Image (tube, rainbow, N blue to C red; front, top):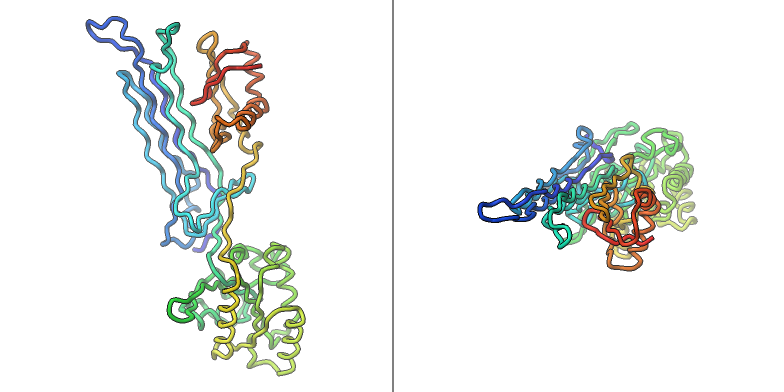
Length: 423
């Protein structure tokens, strides 16, 4: 079963809690605090597996969670770090944050991507001993692991995408110019899944061609297969538009050509701007006047045109030569850059936050969304500190601290970040 889109939830492991413990040993008076730190939670890592061709596995499992780090223990024993959770995906999978649609990673060139980072372990009470606080009876909780709902989209890595109405000969063409063996039949929608083939142009020279299931007019409204497979031509460097130039099904080749291009515009205007070569197929059933009329129309629109009859290989080599020459002038296969996830999405969390007052001047804040907000932020940078301050104000944390009576100079602890409160 070919599945090229899926939505799953991922949860990295929480950091283990720090321990509250005191050293007790014969002949050692007032041994003091010796609670160890918690262990780091496991990361959730997407890994490319070139043996996979679909996202079918994600139909049956929708939630993935890494293990939590172990809690700290007495005698300054640190908790054990949890193992990472690896999720295998096909090459070409684009990972997006589901609520905003922001691209998190493109698994076309990258083999590993840490999508959710495990939380750091909390500090044990050994860290809180001071000359004025010699018996600290509190420790820090572990940092929550990042949690995301992500959408996975498989976009095939092909240099060339074949477009056209059903039964115009796309499968026949890919079967004769490559080693691919798609199902071929004289009826609409014979091809129900994309097929890839490698076209050899001599020693050490080749390109990948994709046979995309046929579009029809109204695909943008869900007619036929709709736009279900057009995502697979978004990466293509070049489009080859196959048209039945004979019109033996009662359709006009020029109308077919224009309607398919109109559907491309509706799906993605940028895709419609991709370089395109037009191939008039089934010339053995067409009158010379039909071929000439269509050729003149296509060339008047600025496209290169080639006549072919795929089953008997007529004109196919000339078409492949033209495709190869055109590819030499085009940039490499498109890669998607990571995008910034909006702040509103990051701090959207029903659990909100929790504030614990451990001492008169020490406030511990817990908020599961906070590590995601500061992901990749350098808190030593002034602008980054201003950003963090805006986040704390917007989320209501500062207002809650003021309600609890925080004063200037009191310490605020947000997991592994501590700072003095300044009103």
